[in-house]
Image 1 (spheres, rainbow, N blue to C red):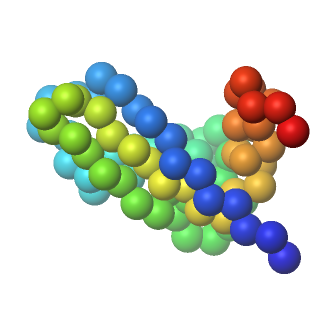
Image 2: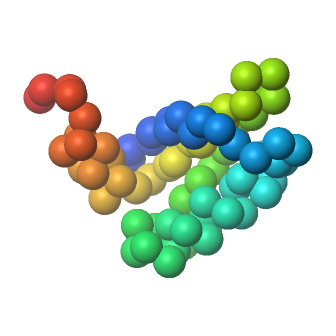
Image 3: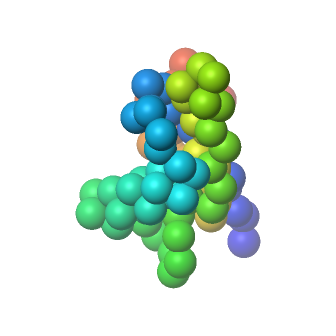
Length: 77
């Protein structure tokens, strides 16, 4: 079985947002939109850069998001 892990850049995050708040929000959105494919959380880690107001979200074990990413990027395979 192949696992896919992606890291997404999220800019302009709300001032004072915590890593846990970001993880909770995006995990809820993944469930609502049907992009979540496995038990547990789709977002497995969040790293926030408070100085520059952005975050990286790490998404693990999600083939559907990986395919969405490839079909909407400028990467040629």
